Length: 270
Image (tube, rainbow, N blue to C red):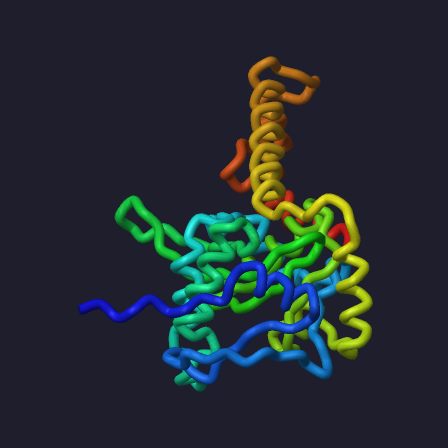
C-alpha cells in the first residue's frame, strides 16, 4: 500500500506568501505541518554585487561543469532536502517538496543544475539550486554541492541569467558565511518589503528559462560566426594565428562558450 500523497500548499497561496515577504518551512522531513517565516533581517544578493573571484571566474570560463536550467528540478529538490553533515533533519518536508514541484509545473519554480561526465558517456548531477520566481523576483530556496565549486557556479549562472532577464531582486532568506563571501548582505525586513514591492510592480516578468536559452543561442551564434571567419580567411593574420585568436564554437573552451559569456558578464560589472 502506498502512502497517501502529501497535501500541497496551493500555488496561489505560495505565491501570495512570497509576494507578502513570507515563506514556509517545516521542522522535519516527515512533518505534515508548515510554519510561515518572516525574518527580522533578510538576506539578499544584489544582482550588481556578486563577488566573482578570479578562481571562480576561471572555473566558469573553462566550462568545467555542464550547466542546465530546469532539466532536473526534482533531482535538485531531492538533493537539497537530503540529510547533510551537521544537518540530520531538513526543513524541506515532503509536503513542501510536493508543493514546489507543483509550483514548478506552473512555471514559478526553477532549478539550475551542474553536471560532470560520469565516465560512461553520460553525466552525473554534482550541484545545483532551486527557487521561486515571480514578477522580477527570484527567491532562492536551497542549494547543494557534491563537488568543489559546483554550487558557486550554479549561483553565478543564476545571477548572470537574472540580470539578462531583467530581474531586480534575488532573495536569499537567511545570511550564511558562504553567501556572504559571494556578495549577499542583510537588510531589515521593512527594507526588503520595499524592494519586493518595487520588483512586483506591473510589467514584464523576468523569464529565467528564456534567458538561459538566449545565452546558449548567443554563444552558438558567436561560435558559428568565428567558424565562418576562419573558413573564409578573414583578416591578414596567418590561419594558425587566426584560429588561436578567434572564439571557438559553443561548448568549447573559447570566448564563445556559455561559461565565457557568464564570466564576462560577472567580472565586467562586479
